[in-house]
Image 1 (cartoon, one colour):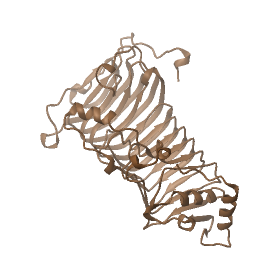
Image 2 (spheres, helix red, strand yellow):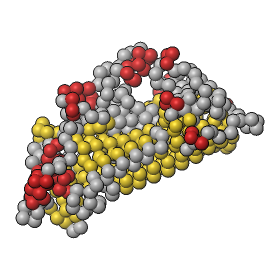
Image 3 (cartoon, one colour):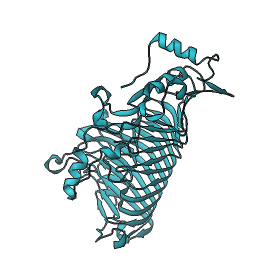
Image 4 (spheres, one colour):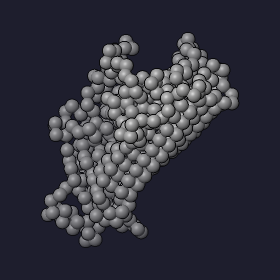
Length: 436
C-alpha cells in the first residue's frame, strides 16, 4: 500500500518544489493554493500507477492552509490502494475533476496491497472532496454471474464474494464534506464513515448494478452529526446503511434505485451492544428495491434504537416498503438459532409512506423477549404493483409484538395492525453495562 511519505529529505525537496520559484507545482488564487498532481509526476494515462504522485502532492498541500490537491479534468489516474492522513492545515480540499480508477482486478494486487479500503482517509478535520469527476472502482470485471436458484444466489451473495475493499473510507475524521462527485463500481461499500462526525454529503451520485455483491452506497458506523442530501444512489445492497454508534443522522431528497433501501442495522450481532438514535429520513424515493425503509437486528443483541422518523417516503416496485426485522440473520439455515434478548426498538414513526409494493406492504417482526414500542404509522398508503411491474400474489401486512398507533389514511386498512399496549409490555430497562 502506498502510504504517507515521511522522509525528511523528501519532504524538504517537495516543499522546495512547491515554492514560488517553481510556479508549475503550485497555482495561487485569492485565498487558496492549488497543487496539481501533474506537477508531481502523475502520468494521468489510466495505465501508469499515479499513487506516488498523489501522495507527494498531498504531503505538500497538507502543510499549507487552504490548499487544494487537483486531479484535472480530461485525465485518468490509475491508483493503487492509498492512505492519505492528517492532521493537516485547515480547509484542505481534494478536487476530483478527472477520473480516478482502481486496478481492474484486485486479485492481481500484491498481498501487501489488498487492504479493506482503496482510498483511505484518516485523522482529518475540515476536509473536502469535491469536483465534477468520477471515482471508479472498476469492479464489474470482478463480478461473476449469480446462480439462478434463489437460495444458491443468497449463499453466493454472502459467502462467495471474498474480501473486497471499500472504495472510499474515512476514519476518525471530522467536519468532512463530500459533494458533486460520482462514485461507481465499487468492489464493496462505496463510501464509508467510521468513528467520525460533522459529515456533509451533498449532490453525489453512486452507481453500481443492482446485483453487485455487498455494495452499500453510504455506510455509517460510530459516526454522529451527519447530513446526506440531494443525492442519487444505486447499488446492490443498502443505499444508506446505518450501524451501531450512530446518532443525529439526517437524510433528505435522496433517490435509491436500485438497492435494498434505507437501512438501520443489522445490529447486535454475536450478542453485541448496539446503539442508534435520532435518525430522520425525509423526502426519499425508493425504486426497484428489496426494501424501502428497514430496521434489522440480530437475536441476542443488547442496546437500543430510538427516535427514528421516516417521512415522505415514495416507493415503486419495492418488495417490502416498511420493515422491522428483529430476527435478522444472513448466515442461513441452522446457524440462525433462536436466542433470548434483543436490541430494544422504541419511538419509530412512518409518516406518509406511499406507493406500490411487490411482496408485502408492512412487515413488523419484533422480538418475543423485547417487543417494539412507540411505533407510529401515519398516512400510509401502499398498493400492490401490477404483474407487469413484477407484482405477484402479495402477502398481507404483519405486525408481530409491535406496539403503537395507526393514524390517518391507511391503505390497505389491514396495515393498521399495530397492537395497543396492555400494560405488560417489557419496559426498556437493561443492566447498566448494556445501556446506550
